[in-house]
Image (cartoon, rainbow, N blue to C red; front, top):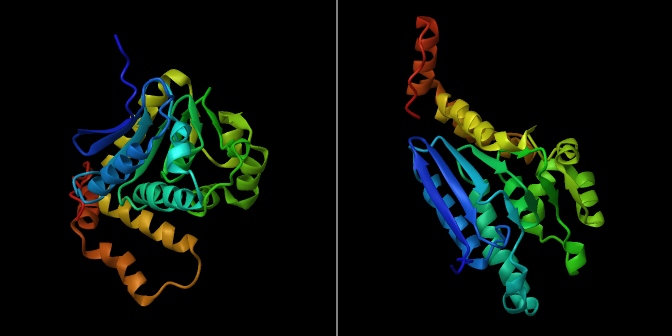
Length: 263
């Protein structure tokens, strides 16, 4: 039987949870131009869906993603114009769609998570990895640096010193070191990664989705520095009259589980 090696990004739903799966059989889920486009489209649709409470990003077949598909480089990045288009108009919008998703996003990391795979994981809110997962950005061996819009997520996550260590050495390293650098939320045994990601998503889904969205929005804004405007303060305190806030207080005082609606 001929193996299908066409890369795809699949979306699956179960109630308020969504799974986004990177799938490129036989290529360690290396991400093609088509897959970058699909990733952006999927996250744009999820962002507009108020019934979503948490998204899990994962790879198929025991690996997260082995970066961009280098086989496409001679065509997609053949000259300076192609390089700019590839990084600014193909990769950057896809990564921005992940970062801009208003719902919490968990990276379920198994096996290889390097290059573009690590860039995707860096845009997620939580990263849960198996003990034998491998990380790195060995693009110095390909003769090019990390593009600005791709470096942005890594810098925000681990800071300048760790980012430079990852990029300048170009090593592929293990989960313990990744956790020490601040790349990971937690490490679990390899056979428990999917379950751990699902438990985390369930915990998030049980909380107030309005509060989760505000926490994401506010944390991104505060990371930029500078004083908040009056409009930004009002945006934050907008939860005060929400149904979710009133329901949370009511349920707590009644000693029952809350039923949140997201508004």
